[in-house]
Structures are given as C-alpha cells and as structure tokens.
Length: 163
Image (cartoon, rainbow, N blue to C red):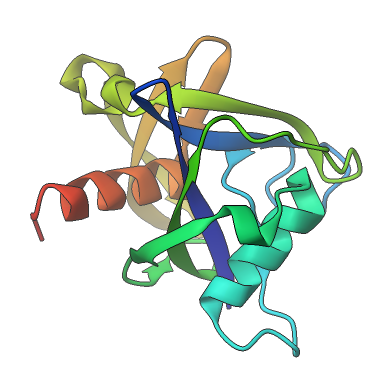
C-alpha cells in the first residue's frame, strides 16, 4: 500500500502540478517521473499522513503548508502496487529541499498542459504477459507515463465531475 501527493501549486493565478524525477539509485521506478509519495509506514494513520510524510522526506515540503483537498480512488498498477492519490494545494511555489538519494529533480507542469488533448498519447505495453493501456505526456524533456499519467487523468476526470 502506498500514497502519493498530487500537489497543486497556485502561483500568480496559474495552477500547476508538482512532479519529481526519481533517482536511478532507487529500488522501484528508477529515473521515472512521479508524485512525491511512497509506502505506508506503521506510524502513518492514513493515506494523507503517508503522502505528507513522504513529500516532506523527498522534497522538504512542510506538512503544514499543504491544504488537503481530498483523495482519489485507490489505483492498482500493473507492478502490483496499490496507490492512494491525495490531492493537496499550496499557494505560491514552495521552497523545496530535495533528498538527492531519492529525487533528482522537482518541477511544475501547468494543469492546462494536461487538459490539451494534443499532449496526451495512448499506447500499450506488455507487463508479465498482459497488455496494458499506457497514457503518457511529453513535457519538455520529461516523459510522464504509467501510474503518474494515470493519476493525472484520474484527477482531471474527478475535477470535471466525470467517473
């Protein structure tokens, strides 16, 4: 069980999503674009606590600076992880301190980029003998795909009131 923080950054009337690039030293999802987050620890009371703790550990985001807006339905990804996305908001770009053992880079992507259908690609990928639909976005030099793209799509659909 894991939780991720879908962190919305409202800065100068522009809404963006904060993403990270994982280092190549991590055990899972090396070098991939992701949300801050990770596995539930024994002391975490819920998914919100996990997402906030992980964001603080990975990018130095103060838990108190995040306004929690809600949670999205749990997502089961082909690698076997179950992830609960927690949606939070910060006003203004927060000062970040990256844990360079886990995070190579943090960056923001305007929500409008994900709303433009021309920026979304759909493909298929085989994993353990099964084919899976894979969504992806190319933002500057970053390929956002897999679970991260699925969570973004889930968030946008929820925000629009779609199932």
